[in-house]
Length: 72
Length: 222
Image 1 (tube, helix red, strand yellow):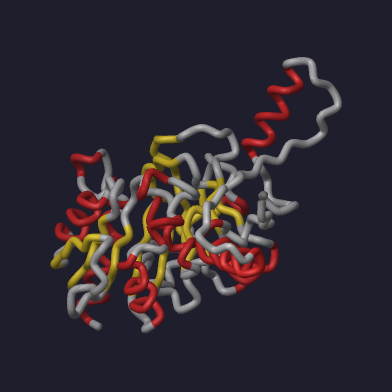
Image 2 (tube, each protein chain N blue to C red):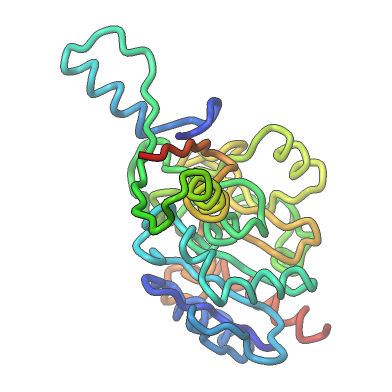
């Protein structure tokens, strides 16, 4: 997700489109992305540590984006 | 003066950049992204415009993690010169060599047109051929050129006179009209506009040529 305070032009366009469709009261839209990874690792904590490193190195740009890791 | 121009899958301004360097008198080597080493005695690395890796994930993010980029970062950290234009600017922010990030244009549109730029500092090998405050016309061609950095970073950039160019009429929502920024040692420049596409009369103008001419002159002396 884009961090708070970072303008999200795409989210703003979606908010505008929702308003045109008659969905009132949508005060803000922020758009993010979901990245699904299929890992060989079976230990949840090891997987979390590994994915966190992936986020820091490549998957997220932490200048503008925050991320969270979920293990399913 | 020896310039290396990096080529990623999806680069499309690499040859324009090479021609601009060559016309200014440089020897140019093209370097493929899977190479790990740069040619010997490279004075400056050009990271060109285009759509490296299809802009997948984030513009420049995958290119910034390609094998050659480790050498680009090492070159810069040793005090070497690097010029990143358009996608090249995005790549340099993703490597961390330059601060900030390029977001989607505020109007969500891909914009391709000549724009007026103001030269904010002549204190760099890239901009020494211009006068501070001089206005030049150079094209932009991008979808994600909306420069963003946090307040603290902006304060530092302005305080250290590291904003190289600003837009006279901000086309993309960039904070403080910023079109290009310098590294702290003033040897890495990233900019969204394309000086290499305004470097000879056939291209409709020559305002960009001074950058390449000055780089070749200054780095040949060094």
